[in-house]
Length: 72
Image 1: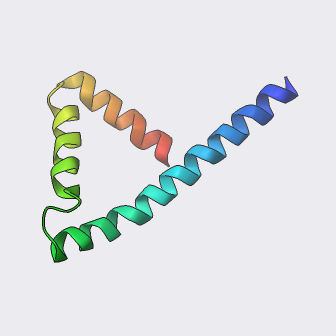
Image 2: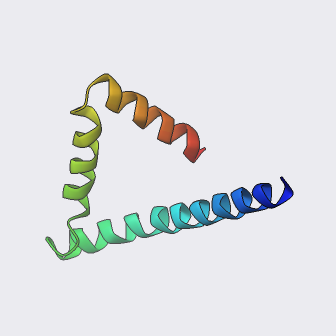
């Protein structure tokens, strides 16, 4: 059981690290997209992501709330 806890802890740390890196890079890519439009398409991709959640109705809302709860 100790090995499983260690594995889950390391996977959780990896996910938090990747999420932190993404949250650092997104504003950078937004600035790049403002300076040179069309190079990163961050705004379009974020819009598509939000549409994928809202297009699914209640299921998408529940999944979005679940992901937000995991993020905290």
